[in-house]
Every structure is written in structure tokens, then in C-alpha cells.
Amino acid sequence: MVRASVIGCGNMGSALVRGLSRTGKHEIIAYDVDPEALAAIEADCAETTEDIERATEPEIVFVAVKPGLVDDVVTDLDLSPSQTLVSIAAGVTTDFIAERTEATVVRLMPNLAAETGDMAAAVTGSQIPEAVEAMLGDVGEFVEVDESRMDVATAVNGSGPAFVFYLIGAMTDAGVEAGLEPDDAETLAAQTFKGAAETVLRSDRDVEELIDAVCSPKGTTIEGMEVLWDSEADEAVAAAVAAAERRSAELAAEFTDE
Image (tube, rainbow, N blue to C red; front, side):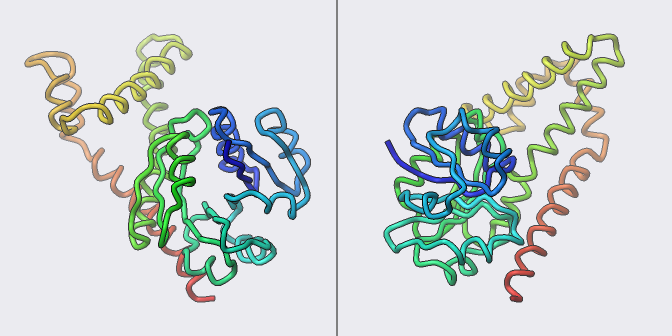
């Protein structure tokens, strides 16, 4: 049983608390200055606390606060070299944090699917402790990237869920417009994305090959794909990722300049 704490229980912090706790392998202490935030996850973790010293006792400390709060929060944490601080603040570099703590620093960009064990995450750091790798593996999939690639990783997997939600909504709306009940259309659209994602992860075939496998000659799918191929859908998705990457870089520059 690995003990860890999560400092900051907003959307991402609480998703991480629930995801790690649900595995039964981790004892999670949740910290926040907002009693209501703690009350919302009290049933989903081993302990909640408003005592920052209590939250800094575990071997692994996740800091899940907004980028603008990282400086003050990390500076106030009394961590030792034997501990690991895992930051999930967008745009805040490991160097920035390392200057403010004695702990080993890991930078992580997860997403909300950590709550259900389906997280996609990018991680970077001079060394990633095995205990951290094990925890991340328990709540989803992760890839280790160079720090210089964290901005684009943030855009793809950190911001990406919102882009996917948008596409699920568009497919749902199309189904409703054509006569499906809203709940039925949403279930079909969401489950289709889930199943397609699992297929990509489990198959040795690339995305283009998988598309070909679904597209029977003169069938329904090829008709729909012809519309997508003739559209600017690819460009729109690429532009959304680029915009999110650009904003992550802007946040990083704010901390580099300090």
C-alpha cells in the first residue's frame, strides 16, 4: 500500500484522488483549503485534511493547483530529498519547481479520465521513481517525454478530452436531429468513441488501416468518410491542438521570466 497525498482538490486533483483510491493499492490523503472540496471527496480517499504538514508526510506528493499558485504552494512545502513532488500545473517547468524544493521533481500532465482508470498522461523529469510509474499505470496509460515536448503533450492529452467531448456532442446532435432519443444518441456516440479508442490501443494496425477495415466498398462508412476527407476537419483539429500548445508555451514563458 503506497501512501501519497494530493494537494489541491479541484477537478483534476479530485479525479486523481478517486482514481488512485479506487484501485485499492494506494492510501491517499487529500488536502485543500476549501472544506467543501474536501467534503466532496471524503468518501473516496483514506483521509482529508486542512493541515499542510499532514499532507507533506507521504513519500509522494501530488501538487494539483493552478499554475499561478505553484510558487507559493511549493515554497511552503517542507519536503526532503527522499520524497517526490509530482506537479500537474500546466506550463510550470521542472526547473522552476526544483529551485523551490529539495524533493525529486516530476512534471505530469494527466487528464480527468484518471478517475475511471482511463487516464492518458505525459510525464517528464530527470528521474521518474518506480513508485510514481506504478501509480500512474494504475490509473491509465502514460508516456515519458522530453520537457521540450510537454506543451504539445498538454494540448493533446490534457486539453484533448474537451475536443473529444465536442466531437461526441456533434455526433450526438446529428443522431438526435435524425430522430434518435437524446440519451440513446449520446450513449451510442460516447461508447463508439470508447470502443474506437480501445481498438487503436490494442491493435497493431495504424489509424488509416483501421479506417479501411471499417469502410466496405460502396457501404455507409465510406460515404461518411468521403465527406470528412473533403472537409477541413483535420485542419480544425490541428488548429485546436496548436492553440492549446501555444497557450501552454505562454504559461511556461511567464514562469521562465520570473
